[in-house]
Length: 229
Image 1 (cartoon, rainbow, N blue to C red):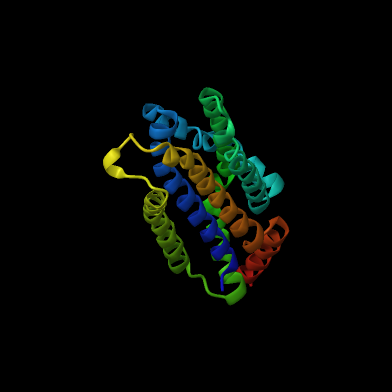
Image 2: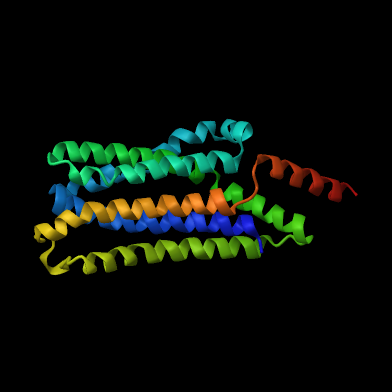
């Protein structure tokens, strides 16, 4: 019944399902598609660096636009990055394809950076929402359920990636010596995982999470009045 908590949790699950499974798939993609397994870890850091960029400015961003609004814009940017990832496998030159992938990953990470910075703050507002609507403040229940589904997604993500790998013909015993058919499918698999992550984030924050800046201000004002009374 706590709509903001459901939306924020779905977004968190999308982030972990997509990014954790994509991380597993990306390592294999760099080994069998680009032939540069040693670069996978360094390149994947690009997806997380934008969070550091936003940290010094997140307070001002939230004050001006609101947590929900800023996060939704971020998910739209991530959607753009996810769609762009479907283009790099079509680039015949592997060096250009790698550069394009890095740019797309950077855009995806840039969009995800805002949500990453405010994810727990969104849950704090969801707890206030529960109190606002029901008169009960259930911090433990809301936080524990949110944490449970986050960790569930973290665990399921890599397993999902491995199942998809098996479905497209990946043979673990061959390590880096996969068929070209399998190698050519890997970039599209990685792009799909990142795009699913962005889609879940947009649905959770843009369509389900209902505490925009105006509603949040009204909620906080009414809660303050109740406590004062």
